[in-house]
Length: 640
Image 1 (cartoon, one colour):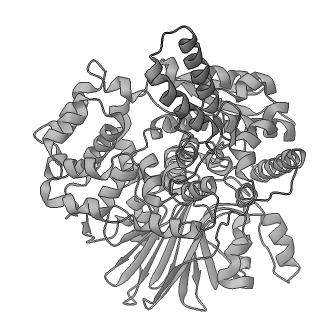
Image 2 (tube, one colour):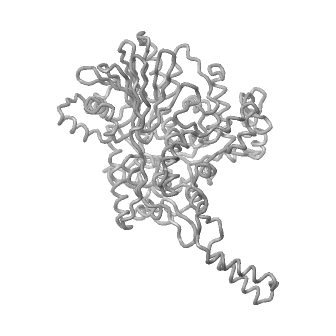
Image 3 (cartoon, one colour):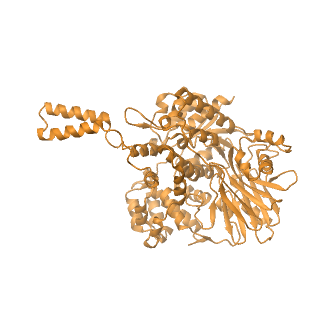
C-alpha cells in the first residue's frame, strides 16, 4: 500500500521539486518505507512506498526500458506473475520482480485497455512522454482511492485529499450538496467530494489528461451484471464457492513480508482465516479487538475461530477515546465521513501494525453474498411479508374456533372473523410493492429528507430536494435484475467503495498497514453475481429469511452451526451508551454541537440539533460530531 501524487501545469511552467515533495510527504503515513519524485518539465509525480513485494527492485516512480513511460502506483496486482509471462512472450524485458513493472509494460502493450487485464486493487497515474499525457485509473471495485482536481492552469491527483491541499494559493469552496448527501448516507458518493472542483475517480473508471490541458473521461471500463445461474445443484454451488474463495485467498497471499488477518469473529473474517490456515504452512497471525460493553463485542467467537485453526491470536480490549482521536480521523479522511466503525478499524489496525505490515480482511462478504439485514427487510417488504405468517394465521384460526367452542366469542363477530382468517390463509403471496430507488433509500438513509429539512437552516433547505445523481444513474442499470440482486448491486457500486473500503483504507493507512480484501475480488464478485436469490437469501418454513446462506453452508465443514447461524453483529462501537444522558461523551457532544462557537450553527438549526441530543439519535449525532470537527479544522481555508 502506498501513496501517489501528480501535477500537470497547462501553461508549460516547470513543476517545482519542492511542491511534489511537499505533496508526497503529506502521504508519508501511507508509505513509511521510502519516497520518490520524478519531474518532466511541466509534469511531476511522486510516491510514498510501503514495501510488500520486491523490497530491492520495487522503488517508485518506475519506468519502462527507455524512460518514456513512468508510473506511480498504489495497490497490488495479484495476477502480475501470469501477466509478466504473457508480456515476456511478447518481447517485453523486465528488470525487477515487482508487480508495479507489470503495469508499465501492460500499458505499453495494450494502452488504456491495460486495466482490463488487471486482477487486483489499484489506483495509479502513468506519465506517457511519447503521447504527452497522464493516464489515471482505479480498480474495478474501488478498493484504492484516487482524488483529482482541475484548477486554473493545472491538474493534480493524489491518494488523499490532504496532498491536493498543498497546492499553492488554493482556495477551496464548500460543496453544500455534497454535505447534504453526507447527512443522507454518512458518506459522500463519487464523483463529488466536500469541495467544489475536486473529485473522486469512481471505481472501474479511467481518464487521461494531455500536457496542454485536454481532459478525456472519466469513462467506465468494466460493468457488473447480475445473471443468476439456475442450473447448478446445491452440491455444485458449494463446490464452486469453495473453489472461488480458496483461489482468491491464495492470490491475496502473495507477499515478501509477514502478514496476518483481521478476525472479528463474524462469518466473513472467519472464512478468510479458515482458507489461510489451510493454504499456509505456519500458523496465521490473527488480530481482534473487543469492548467492555459485551453487546458490542464478538471477541468470544473470534477466540473460537482462532482456537479452531490454532492461530497466533492477538486480542485487545480497548476503551476508545472517541474525542481524543477524532481530530486525527477527520484530518486523514479529508472530508466528512460518518461511519463510526472507523473507530474500531483504527484500533485494530494500530494493534496489527505492531506485528505485521499487511493483513487480510473479510470486508465485502455481505454485499456479494447477501448478508445485510437490510436485504432481508427489503425482500420481506417487497413480498408483503409483514403480513402474519400462515403458521400464525392457522394458530389464530384454531384459537378462534376454541373460543367459539367455549362460548367466549360473540357469535355476531365469529363469522366475519373466520372469513377474514380463511381468506388470509388461502391468499397467495403478492409482490405489489415497487422495487424503486426511493423505496430502497428508505432502508438505508441515515437522515431522511424531512428530517434534513428541519435540520438545515431555512436558506439551505432546498438542498434536500436535490437528486442523488450517482444513485439514480446506477439504479437505472438494474433493470431486469432480481430484487435482492438490485440492492446488492447498489451497495457494491456505492456503499462498499465509498463507505466500507474508504473506511478501511484510511484507518489502516494511518498506521502504514496494508489491508487486502479477498472477498472484494473481481472473480469473487462476478461469481457471486450468478448466485440465485433462492440460493443466497433463503426463506424457510418459519417465514424468516436467512442471508448469506451459501457462504454459511460452505463454512459448515469448518465451523459448527451455532457459530454460523447466530444473529449478525456489525463492527460497531457503543456510542449510543456514550451519548446517553449519563454517558461519558454527553457533555462534550452537547458543547461540540450546541456551544456558541460551534461551526454547525452557521448551517443548522440549534433547536433541531438539541432535539437529536435529547432523544439520543446516535447515528445523526455522530455525523454532526464528525462534521463539526471537520468544519473547525477547515474554517480558515474553505469558503462557501
